[in-house]
Image (cartoon, rainbow, N blue to C red):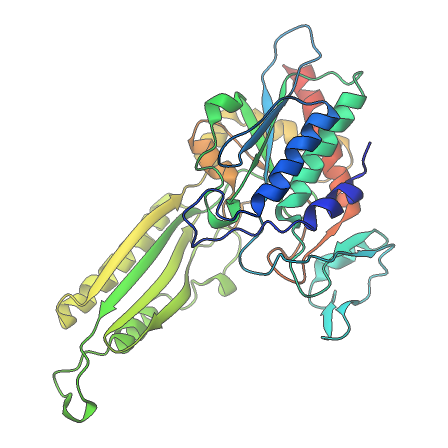
Length: 408
């Protein structure tokens, strides 16, 4: 049986970065490289009904070893990595028996992973950490989740004395660009509920996430010679700046936490005749989420009254808080919580300050809480994952399968 570290190191060395500007699925051809490898591994360990479709969505089954019917459960992860930071030529560094001090990721560039800044590191003192070399992301989001699911399935196959029902696994492309669940065939998957293995630190168990929308604000200006511009020029850049200044100053990602929502301006570009602002809107509360969208509408209306319809707003809902879909079947969260406790983990039940495939899948009819995969500092050069956290995640998956068999 392959250990989690070896399996994880194999996966992260394969570049699977997704591309938000691509219209294809998967959004990058290189995602197929890992997808085909996963299909081969699923077959090699003994999974049945291994399937990959034309968009690289993967499904497989571990048949029940019971002589009675129980609910079918699933485990889901994504194999793409974030477009925010390079995933090419990932060169993982292995830090054994971490001593709680600074980790020099790249001495030539002076890149240091320090507990003075990333204090979560200290809870893993004495453990084995896998880090980047300071030039790429690592890919624990979500190759750690894939590693854990396949390793858990292999463990169950090799230990038939552990009783379980039918288990489904699913791996998706393009989660990092918000499309991971778009073509997921819930009916074909055939599970009563599932868990995404896509959380961060050990113990995380999440069934709430943001309501989310994207917004694009376009401003039309008029360019006139500045020497003769009085009452004629309309400077789109200045109007765009005014719009940003009208947003609540304290309601931004860097000043919020927990269930606090925000506006996040992430792209601004333009010139005198045209400017564009791109932002995202997030809030756990559906009423406050709607209020945030209305505030943008009000700002645009206010400026259009002055600038004669120079401003256009486009808002697109992206996903919604899965809490409303999970609460009616809350026993699936309780099973995960008990599984963690039974393998010595203290559950950390908290809202996700983001979204996962699980939120979209829950609204597609597959209730899907989120469980830790173990990594930290996703989407950048300071990303790391403790090997022991991945091993514990494997134990949690196995225990969930076992508990589902005994409690059904």
